[in-house]
Image 1 (cartoon, rainbow, N blue to C red):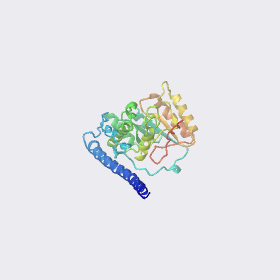
Image 2: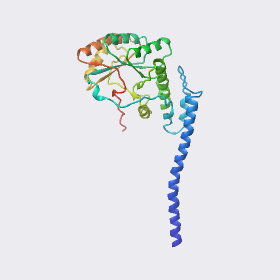
Image 3: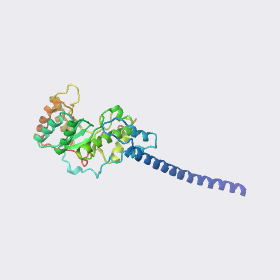
Image 4: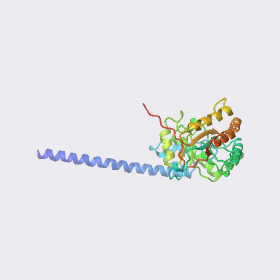
Length: 301
């Protein structure tokens, strides 16, 4: 009987020791793997041959982490981050309109800037990657005039960008460097192509949005659309869409428009501004102290 008790006591002690040793061993193993991964990232991505090159669509750097542990994309491009101290909701007037323009710079940029200056207001431009001297000049002018520049994407190729979280981070990093190197201003805002939730990113939007926020980068959706990207849109339809949409907002209005050479938008823009100003609305450019609309994650059935 005593032998049987001693046997089971030893088995119990052995099981307890095993339960303690296995997690400890796992922690040590994961620490070694993460240290090796960090060294590889720093060698190949940040300072090595795979460092991001402006003007290319090669996403070799991201392939390093695709075969590595979960969330290793957090180690990609640590310099792409911003300082975020919180939203100042009390400082934003409910009758504020934030005009935003996606897809520039373009031939529309300077005319849009002229309209904004004429009316004494500022706006926000979410830009793509452009390689021409003209586009760089237009981008500098946006910043010089006191407007905000945010990231939209570098390539604007949905199938490439949303193939993985790593791809999207790499694309945005190229966009980040393009803006920072051209204007000497590091962007703090992001507008995902198609919005934070769209048919192309359904599999990756939760970790992608979380990763942007972890880096202190605020992603901005919208609650009013001018509809200028719709086929057969007219200046009249754009004006009506914005005026009606702004009036339906319970708080500040974030208006989606595009900087892509649309002559009808250039015709509608002064009317939009003047009509809203006449109704007591004011205009401002976004920064990361303003709480923007963020599309709601759909509930799973």
